[in-house]
Length: 260
Image (cartoon, rainbow, N blue to C red; front, side):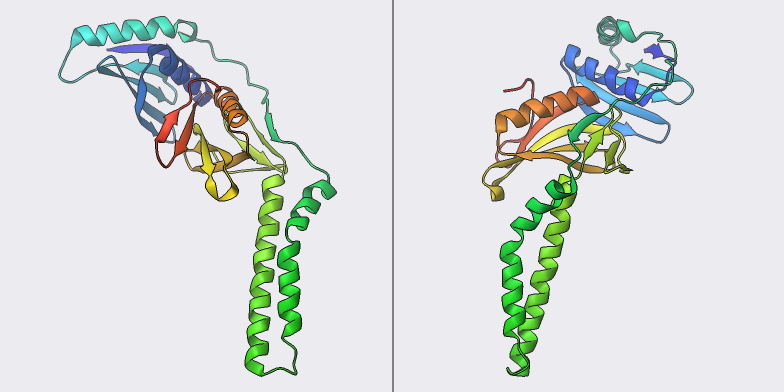
């Protein structure tokens, strides 16, 4: 059985329809297959499977064909889906949207961007200076060589941490379709799948929030307040039309239903 939803083959509209189906029907996505010009997402609900399909030039539709054949179940699932998706049925092609962006990390001045990161590298800088100064020409060549080598390695580590720290503080905005722009440069991420919170035990229970894309993962926030992190993750997930999850080693991935 088939239900034609819209002639508009828009990925953002597809994400919005998928979010409504998941929320209103109480199902779980078991397949989320995306191609260049088509998408097949299977939602397991009430003992059956509903396929949300996008095809370029044809639009968005629902397909229900459970195996073994069960016409009664198919008809029931189509009826339920048509009720919750009534606002989306036969939508006219919308005018070209004006992108709106969610600012996740605001733009900082040069001093505020660099100085805190530089300050954290002071211990490494002191170690590097001590190693390099201790490798004087008067010492044995092997000791001088070792001091210079370890000093250079510490400098490389310091440069890496400096670049990483500045990168993580650089301004970041994301549009509703998931396109990310950092410092005015568009990142090559597309098709957001979910928003995920992960706990970083190495940083004394700090929390990191990611957008998981079809082709990569983007770190969007890091802080120590788990309640605030869950709330922001849910807000970001609603903005992108996806679901928010919390990942832990002990309990695996669990969907966040509402801010704690």
